[in-house]
Image (cartoon, rainbow, N blue to C red; front, side, top):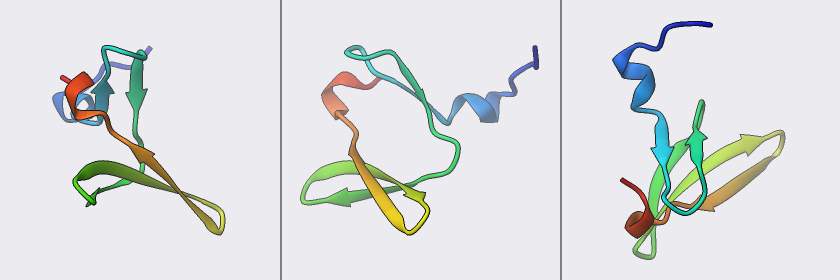
Length: 56
């Protein structure tokens, strides 16, 4: 098991609703007042909403 550095912990989003999410490579943007992250999967970009009220 590898030790985590403090910079590694900044990429983990904690949601009170649904566990932990580790974002290895993504872009974060604001779209119409919502915060989203974008991941590239092949030729497609996948957009995911980050629920601010449920994220610490």
